[in-house]
Amino acid sequence: MSVRDALEEDSLFSPFQTSVVCILSVPFLLVATHNLMQVFTAAVPPYHCQSNLTFENSYTTEDSCTRYVSLESNHTEPCKQGERIYNLSIYTSTIVSEWDLVCEREWMKELAQSTYMAGVLFGAMLYGPLADRYGRRIVILCCLLKIASMGTGAGFSPNFLAYCVFRFMTGMGICGLVINGLSLTMEWTPKKYRATVSLIQGSTLNTGQLILPGVAYLIPNWHWLQLALSLPYFFFPILIWWVPESYRWLALKKRSRQALWNLNRAARINGKKEGTFVTLEMLTLENEKNSTNVSSKRTPLDLFRTPAMRKMTIYLSMSWFSSSFCFFAIALDIQRFGFSLYLLQLISGSGEIPFRILGTVFAAYVGRRYAVSLSLIFSGVLILASLAIPSDLITLQFAVTILAKGFLSSSIVCSFLYTAELYPTELRQTGIGFTNMMMRLGAVIAPVAMMTRVYVPFLPLVIFGTVPILCGWPILRLPETLNTQLLDTVEEVEARGQNATMEKKKDREYGTKL
Image (tube, rainbow, N blue to C red; front, side):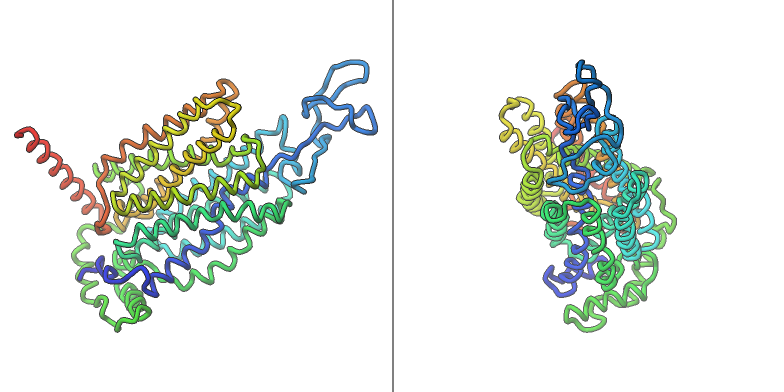
């Protein structure tokens, strides 16, 4: 038995595996609430400009951003900051009503969300390489504390600038938690159960979309809503402290004794005798075998240094960018359908669940790359098809949009699984971090693409429909990872790529002979 086969005899329902999956999934419950929190914290209450002509403030213009200059004329003037009256019957306080983010300051609302997504993007750049260097577990613990402290700080923000800074830092922590939590879970999971675990954790991430409207309905004040969704992260490190560091990462870093201790701990929890997993001699032999291949100073440049790694990183980055680019554009723009915002968010979040299940089952039995690629292509086709729906058929437009969002959600959950399986252990977190950086880049650019509807109303839908189709096809050129072992080194990845090339060459030669 090799080190990489140490867990293959275990079941997903073994006590240790069950505990790891459940504990690492708990913090994921509130991730989506932070990603989409601004749907409610930045909701725009009805407002009008306070008139300076009457005591009743009823002499107002049709444009809420202006007011009449005098009773004798129809001339208007812009309403100054602080002179607007907001209807706070639904939302007692939002960042829009508190800092007057409407009219000429409306762009600041979009800036706040883009700042958060920029933090997520920066977190992907930072916490992936840090986890490959210092370990997955310590980075997860730091990210949890960062989310708790920065999220709480955002709730007490005295001004808009401080709010953006705190949200930026919260986004960094959220990304570090997700990419490292998913990877640590995969590295403790037998290969035949990785698709199931991906579904469980993907569904847990989606659960936040169902939690958010309920909590937002109960807490209509943005300060308290921010605190309610941030304070629980102070308690999550107590749970994560129980989860051991990845034995694969420890073995790769030649920390054999700690890797052995973690493996034997898993064996004891699963009811096995000490030492029946793997011995110190086996770990030492594995280290010696990989000593010539493993570099202790891998950098993000190694994602592009060799042909197979370069191809893999470029195609995965395209996939991640397109899925996030379109997903967040849809998720953050649901208010345009005109229904109750709480109901829209609830339907939007629950509508993703069957697609996540369908995508994961498809990935488990047909293949990971087909699940990712087809999900992207179908979502693009549906978005383009919505262009043909008349504007008065709002319900049909909403239904098609939810279907497209469901396929994008399926693509994201399958991409987490596929990306973790494609990259080798020594660069797994760096690769996941980089591709997630591209994912967040898509989320940052999405609001900019939405602004094009000012010039051409249908242009955003054309963009959001075309991009996933163009980015979905290249995924089919990557190797399949269904029922394959996780690789540990870049050299193994390159060997896999060369073998795939040779097989394709033989197939072409055989076809020519026929």
